[in-house]
Amino acid sequence: MSIKTENIIYVYGEGTPFKTIALNDVSIDIEKGDFVGIIGHTGSGKSTLIQLLNGLELPASGKVIVDDKHVGSDKSELRKIRQSVGLVFQYPEYQLFEETVEKDVAFGPLNLGLPESEINIRVKESLQAVGFDYNDIKDKSPFDLSGGQKRRVAIAGVLAMKTDYLILDEPTAGLDPAGRNEIFEQIKRLHKANNQTVILVSHSMEDIAKLVEKVIVLYKGKVHMQGSPKEIYRNAQELVKIGLGVPQIVEVVMELRKNGFNIKDDIITVEEAKNEIIKELRRRRNV
Image 1: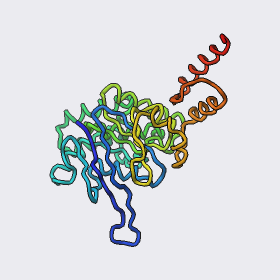
Image 2: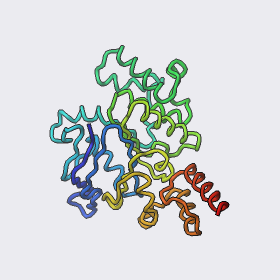
Image 3: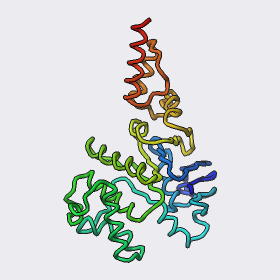
Image 4: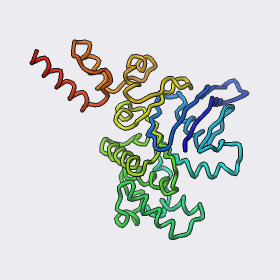
């Protein structure tokens, strides 16, 4: 099982003076169980790409393939593909509308025509998956919750659809540090517990470094780099050149190396940096 794109091109404003190529010859491959981060500055094509992945938009040319199904080739398949690829937009809490949390999370499964018993099971499992106690939260109004809690309810609503792939577009946008940590902890837990395929769009280089296993860098509508976080952030100067920057700890490590510290050049977390610096200081004491 996988999602992949083959040489896709997407154009805004075709036939007008405002024609813009949003994606140009983009090919990616995301396997079942992957945790992938998509990064790029505003206008790089991130949001367009993820909307193509579940058929909300269709490419001008090239192919989007979900589990061997060509998206857009058969309209009857689109519904199935959208049930397989769950997309959580920025500020998804703005889409909450029911009077209780339970009803909001049940809305998607209800529209699938599932029996009530199955809907109840999905609602309970989904709320528990994002860290809620079902009995404590089910009767509360979603509008009485904190920002982080609303975001988790919105994610539960997508999980209740039993999607194979979960795409999150800037899931912590606008949240305070506590809310950000809350969301990311739940996303990490979902990925590990269920082998859930997660595609995370974020502008935060620190978050990407800590969370994902593979990074796709978009720049001016093209795939500029792909690889593990260590491989990507080793090219710190190139990232800075295209306006992305790097995690602060990577900048610290670069400066330490310039000043003679014999430490690895692929450090991307504070914990890794601490261990390497301690090793280097011990080595210096023993020289």
